[in-house]
Amino acid sequence: MKSIKSSEFIALSACTMTLTALGIDIMLPVFGELRNYFGLGHNSTATADIITFFFMGQVTQFIFGVLSDRYGRLPVLRIGFPLYIIGGVAAAFAPNLPMIYAARFLAGMGASALFTTTIAGVRDRFVGDQMAHVMSLIFTIFLLTPVIAPFLGSLILSISSWRMVFLTPPIIALVVFGWSSLRLGESLPQEKRIPIKWDTMRRSIRMIMTNRPFLRYTAITTLLFSVLSAYVSSSERIVGEFYGHPELFKWIFAGMGLLMVCTTFSNSYLSSHFGAWRSIRGLLIAYTILGGGLLLFTILSGSLPDMKVLFIAIAFLLSINLAVEPNSSSLAMEPMGDLAGLGASVYGTFFFFIGSSAGSVIGHLMTHKVFPLVLGFFVAGVAALMLAMGDRRKPGNFVQSKSKYDTGLFKKSDQPGDQGKI
Image (tube, rainbow, N blue to C red):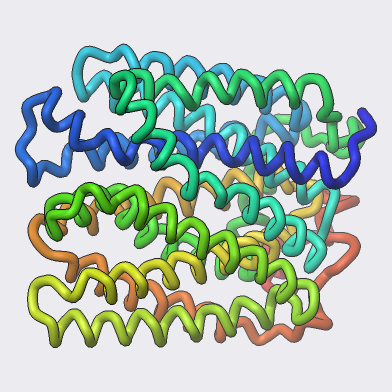
């Protein structure tokens, strides 16, 4: 394995994951230009599908997770970068929206390979609350993207075209690809790799899908991500069309990004001092209370609530959401051990594909008002809080050093029905 310091590994992992966010956030300022270019109406939701198809490409995480557990993390990482780059270039030169959707799906496939191998690589190196701490640091760097990307997209659009904005993520991906090729070593030893056999696959999937903590915390992330994706894909239209202030969009999005950075960085402290189990409960209580308050305010305000109140509340909701995710991912991945790649792929497929599909439904319901989005925040918060409170395990019972799946994975004594007791 190549020698790489923890600080550089965290920075490289964050930059790799940032490509997913960059592939979304940098394009939001050009949606108005795209509607004009393709002759769409001002209330059209077609541009939101550019984000949705990118998210839906994450369904291939399952395939990449299996491959990473069999062949290692690096080969899959080196498949993901070219897919992301080719998809990004194809989208930039696509002649119509259906072709853009197809190219964005391909780029999403590449992003799914990068996401899966990054999460699995972190799990290979860290476990438990330490993983939650590292993931929070990675997400702190990762969340600088929403601060910078809208301004970068607007700047590029002011001196060039929307096609150049689409080309920027694959160009940056080339740089990160070179960095990872030179510095990143393989984190999955040969002796821990799992052969691709039907019986092995069936048993591995059964173990994952009968693991109650994994399902519980994956569901929490999926619920919250569905509303987050609905907001991200519709945010430009809410600011520009619903409230009539398109010039404020990049400032609102950047302000939210700064708050997310602060909240996620604070979560690295919370997870270190209080543990992921306690932190996620407190964060979800705050999320649900805030979501309920925004819902009540929206009902009392009529069709459109006050713009300042709405976006301040959404900024805090999304910030809490992004602080929850490192905790939920570490708690979901805690028992995975040798199945970290496959577990990360199932985890990512659930919250990206199912979450973005649900978010697309919410987004298409927002034709003239934000009530579907506000209601989504509250319902997701209540459901996620109920799931978190349903975990009766105590923090001291969590596996902190070695997963049940780390050795002897396929012994006959391992019964899938026992996984909920981990």
